[in-house]
Length: 195
Picture (spheres, rainbow, N blue to C red):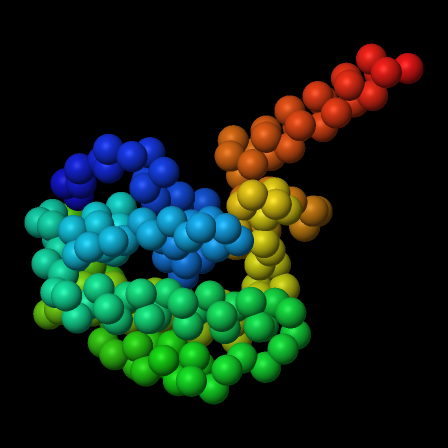
């Protein structure tokens, strides 16, 4: 695949640490707990996400229409709400379920053997359908119980806990786990200094 241009602001880089395409797609809206950070502000950014997520049907940048961007954001938020409801044991909103199901029913990417990984007549729409289908399979399958929210209060990422003991607490050690370790160390050091 061709390399997409890297955003100038590192905060706009896509975190691919969710373990599933739908979880990585939900992460395109960061800092949900505070002032949200939109990582797909335009069609070029959505095209870049599709490429970086390895959902592009060719080496060429994926052409994304304005309507695809609207559909992507609506899908992303519907997936997020459905996931959170399912994780909390609540019934998801029927409109959100319908949105996810509608996009999952569209033609998705067809896998290919050889140098081209996927094929599709409408690559951007097919990539979104593939993400929606992944969400349906995750929410309706046995892996849902392994989806967790990062325990860092400053992080809103969801991830699939694929650790053997199922005790993973952070979206990633490099990202939030190390921050927690440093904060814990500093707290213990301050407590020791006051004794």
